[in-house]
Amino acid sequence: MADDVRLAITCDLDIVQARQRGRQLAADAGFTSGDQTVIAAAISEIARNILMYARKGEMTLSVVTNGERHAVEVVARDQGPGIRDVERAMQDGYSTSGGLGLGLPGARRLMDDFEVVSGHGKGTTVTMRKWKRSNV
Amino acid sequence: MEVPILKQGDYLIASIQSALTDADLSQLREALVERVGRFRARGVIVDVTALDVMDSFAVRTLRDISHMARLRGAETVIVGIQPEVAFAMVQLGLTLKGVATALDLEEGLAFLDRLKGGRIDVERQAQRRFDHGR
Image 1: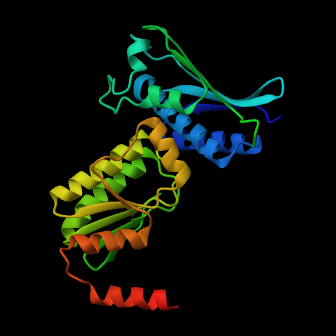
Image 2 (image 1 turned 90 degrees about the vertical axis):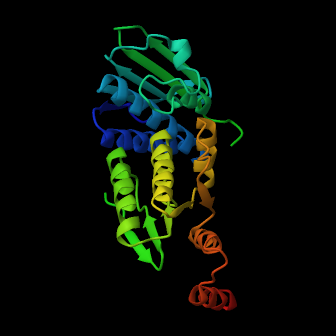
Image 3 (image 1 turned 120 degrees about the vertical axis):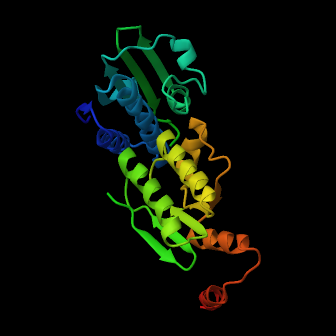
């Protein structure tokens, strides 16, 4: 299986790079092109959140396995101010940045597993996975 | 990566060729809004066929382009959203509400022509008939 991809997220070009690497990883792992797009879109939202709220951070992309099943796993970490109210941040349309407020809830809808660990002043880690559908 | 903007009659056609950064998208917005005035354009087409992802920033920028161009007297139509891109957009909750869309460049041109209030662009109609006849 391909090595993990580790990317620094420090500017808007890194967002493009991250979603392209994510798409490539998913393609190499045999994901449908529809799922490649879904993964790339989720990466784009989460990478932009890093830039917007923490200014910099990093993303690790990998393929993980559970028995016969494979998933693309994305882990996004930053040392930013953290999310004061994770539950609210997961609601559509809630934003403290003047954005659309669709980043976290949108990415959660796109992916299968989605977990946010954050605390005020403690930075934020988002872990999300998309499982390869077995019938394709 | 700068997006080329072509002028065709009363219309401006921006044809996105590759993945764009946020800065590229913002630059496209400024360029289009400025050129609507410079070329006295009545319509703007943004062709996104080559975009393999549309995230919230891209959608917000396209919506801004459409609203700003309208304030300057031009209608905008977004063309070429791919099926998988549309699927991911809807999942993200991005619907481009209030922004005109069309399947492809040809449909986009037809849409803008209809908006011109029944004024028929004879040359383009003739070209279309020719194309269909082939």
